[in-house]
Each structure stands twice: as structure tokens, then as C-alpha cells.
Length: 197
Image (cartoon, one colour):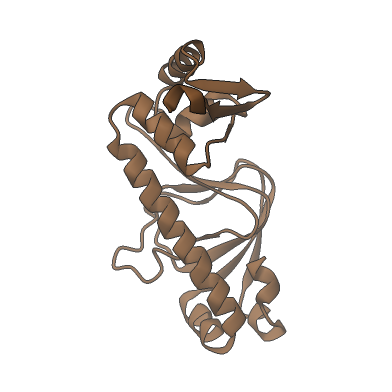
């Protein structure tokens, strides 16, 4: 985990924040003054639509970073609420402290750039996902970027990942299962390769 790469003098530049389940850590349009590193727990970045539906842009787990794409941006405002899904612990590092750590801790710098690069790739995948207007094409692309394996915790969470309604997602999966385009083993969905060859 990237936190483990921080030296003693680096840790003195961080602020440790404990948050409770359901707590909003930063609100949409709050200005970002630091990066956050998830140490324990799970966070989400989400917005509420005009119709009252929640759209989750990102889910963060231990080792993930947030705010890094805003801290050096001209528009430093959060694009969604950063909320705790579970009781969580995060490390906050302000801009000046981060620059100091990046200059003096090469191992942290390399890991930081790696995480930032992976985040950019993930963001590009989401943008491409949204470019598919057809629900089936969107679902197939989501399967592709997840190495032909989707774990279904529940339909609602999958629908949010696909940026589709729960009803559309449920109907699509049932139809593709009936047509044997996909197969289900336990709580996992796979593309039926024979059907698509």
C-alpha cells in the first residue's frame, strides 16, 4: 500500500481523519486542498441527479487516492460528494506537503504516478462506456474491460456501474441469459464464447 512507503518525516506532514459510515467527507463543489489516501474502509464519489437518483462515479478502497486530479487543476472543486460507505480512515496531504514528499521520496513518487496512471485509464474506460448508447453494447464493453467476468453483488450496483437503470439492466441480463449470449456461474457473469465466435 502506498501509505507504507511514507517515511517517518513524511507521516508528520499528513493529517489522519477517521470518518463514520454514511458521513460525507467532502461535498460536491467544495474546493480541494489536499489529496486523500484511503487507509481503511470504502468511500464513494457520487452525485444526485435532478430526478433524485444517485450516480456513483468511483468507489475507493484501501490504497486508492482521490483529489489528485483536482489539486493541481484550475478548477479545484469536487465534482461529487466523497462519502464513507463504511467506517473509514484516510490520510490527507496538502499540496505543499505532497510536493515535498514527491521530491524526497522516490518510492512514493513512483507508486503515486502508477496509481494516477491507472486512474486515468479507468476514467477513459468509463468515458468510452458512456459513449455506447445501446445498453447491450455498453454491457458487453463492461464485460470486456473486466476480463470477461462480472461479479454481481446486486443488480442495483451493477446498474450504477453501467450508468443504466435497474430495470433496463435486469431485463438485459435476463434476455442475454435466455439467448445464451452470457452464462451465469454462482454470482458471476461470463460471455458465452461459443455464441460469439
